[in-house]
Amino acid sequence: MKEEWQQNALVGYQENAKHLFGYPESTLQEYVRDLTQFQAWLSGDGHSTGGRVGTNTDVINADEASESLRETVSIANRSGSSRANPSGGSGSESFIEQSRAASAHLLGCSREQIEEYIVSLSNRGLRATTINRKICSLNSFYVWAVHHRLVDVSPLVGVRKLKVPRRIPKFLTFEDIERLLSFTGSLRRTSTIRGKQVRAMISILYYPGLRREELVNMRFEHIEKVSDTEIYLHVFGKGDKQRLLPFPAPAFEAYENYVRFRPECVCPQAFISLKTLQPMSKFDVNNVCDQLSRKVKLSKKLTPHLLRHTFATHLHLKGQPIEHINALLGHESLNTTKIYVHIDAGRLRRSVEELYRPAPTEG
Image (cartoon, rainbow, N blue to C red; front, side, top):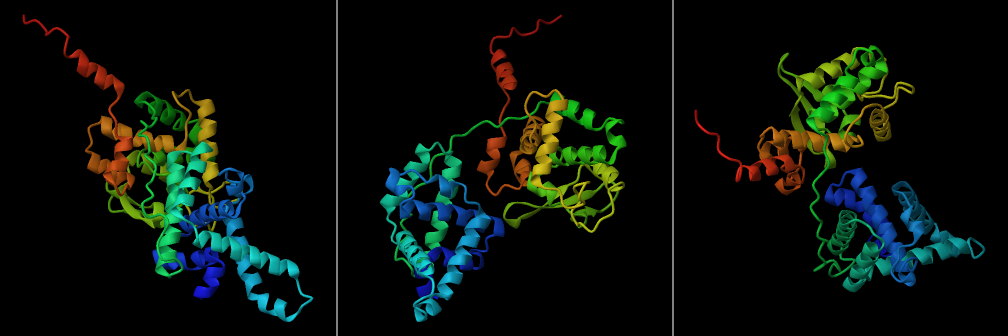
């Protein structure tokens, strides 16, 4: 097995890393995509052009990367019969040799090459958060390679992630939210099943602060109704991490009103495409927000994540502790939550005004 992985290390990583690290499938596929791009850069697609990642590798999606790796394994397994049959596929042998060479580049990579690659990504204008994710992908691969003794030391040792500038997230005002909920909750809008569905989606994205993925993956059995006034929602977030949230009354009311008229189908997800009766996609949620942005006058363009920013910010402005907001958002680190929690400029202005505003006179 070790010899096979040396000939195509990416295949070995994809086959074994999920078991070794316990990654969810989505994370593994994302890492494989990053590693496929890096391997292509090492092999010359980008390295030979002054450190620029080749455009062909940029558009490789996770499924294509996986299929390419499986094809490599299949060809490698047939290589013995090809050698036995001299007339059989020189193209296959060439492909195998290319895979072995690419794997050798990957396993023989140095720290200097890693740093050069990071510089090339930065020169292309990629955000620090994106580059840091790619560094995580590389680190995962080389930890796996060291574990299986394919390399002695990871070339990532001593390589630091880029500093990510803190950006104050955008959010909607209380007036924006009131306008949005009034629009989606109007009798004319909620008279149709589509209107009821949109009302429920917006309410659940805002009141419990769900991510877009968490909304589309929401199932009936995730709701736990203890009593009429005590209702909880089991949410499965990033990395299949679970958290228990209170299901706010306005959101639950909108949800019940939608489910009562939801078409009968075998789909276990609560939110479905009303045309196909299949699970609603993330892009369907984006489309709903895009349509509402055109119909409702808001201070900012509506997106699913903007509602999550708004949820966290409004909790902070209402005086809720950061620890509570952290638990509701499902963040592992309190530092992550601090990005959402900021003081609005108006409060700062009023605080400074207290220094020079004359004290009220008595009598």
